[in-house]
Length: 615
Image (cartoon, rainbow, N blue to C red; front, top):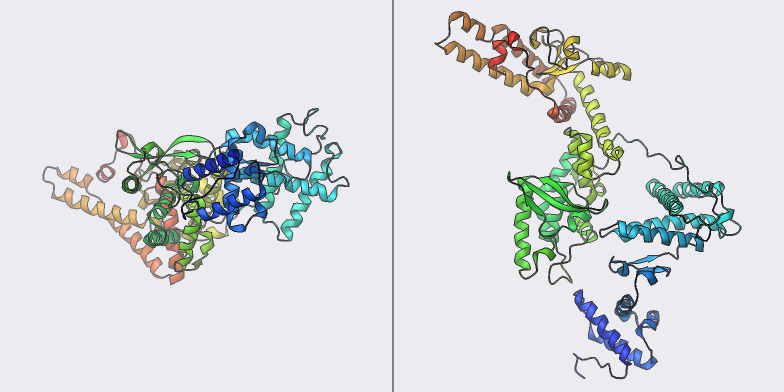
């Protein structure tokens, strides 16, 4: 016998067919089979005279051939079973349900009635979900039900075997046990809440499926054995920036993408860059098909992806030209690597192993591991204030949080951002806006100490000492105008479009400005100076028309004085204070991007030539 042969003589025809079928399945998945392992297995089969390889106990075989034997057994089992027969087992082969080489173990649920209910629930959920993480999500729910069953086993004299004997006290005991596990450090606050949420969901939906009727798994279960709305601990309100990455950290990561490509390859780098640019979930990016880019008649690009979490196929996300160019370039690279694979089967980010045709996408766990190594090898990351940023907070999903926070800070309407992010609950989307509001409030209070009126005099310096109600009253009693805010009542009531003084802001006592408006103030001054020279040089104007059109020297002087006073006040600050003001200016200006800062329009009868010249 040569080193390239395996002798199947002496085995039953059925066993020979099973081995050949299993090898065929492995070859179809681009799995390498070492012949020396197969020889050891066939010798064991001949010595024991088994009728089918499914009956072989793999644990009795040498350790180095167990994976091969288990895969051959799985392939044979899958060919002889289906969903109808698999659902009666306690350990499901999820390939039978179309979810790959995974197992779902129900033996973790101690009580037979509760285990049966969990199976019914999973069977109902499977057709409704898609994506690579379906089994992991369902496993989390089954484990939460197992935690409920374990609580019943520990404190019930009958180990929770009789559903008719259960009541509200058993739910309370379960919740107290979770609280104890959290205090002991066995569970995080997040895990505690999710465990209770999942158990409550499965129990509630099992009732809705009619499993509490006579003859069904939950028959006799009391209505008192249920979770109430307020049983779960409330999510703590967090006004911090949450898990969104600071701009300085994100900038440093983008600058280091070349190092990621050198360490992990081009596919890994493109995947991370797409996560940053698009804010999609990791699984959504990893499973992008090759043909995932579309261009409309206006030349604008959109990313076509699947929202696995909400079971929405063919979602469209507008993307910028730079992201589109990245995709176009990478698509050509992938096509050059796999020229013979049909485009409909080709993955945008093909995995590196067991993938001769390029049809298998990279797994998000592989991406997460490569990303973690890259981040850990980088130099220290710093916040805008110079303090060091914790690298453990840089994970794949943080790019999604950062994407959402940037949109919230830029003033994207909450309903638009909800649709953009694919959130089921608008409350989840609103969390990003609460961060924006808190950050903006802090920035506004910082700028209040350096706020001026049109004469360059300090105003509202006591803003940080105001009660919350007073702060709110001031907010509703002012409106945005060019170069600042206006507190004149009639103009505020009209939304800034009905000034009784024809928008002479610089000479009005109701006008306020601060350092965040310096670019607009300087631009307005330049505009006035240009208009003055242009009008003076005009030869086609009568004298009275020239006098009306030329900007007044008083307005120019007042504007120069205001700019000098603001700049002088900033120069007098310490370095730390100036840094705080600069950060506040950055936050406020970003928020102000959605506020119309153009000059308010007035009717033709009150049109002022001074305003018309620099509108």
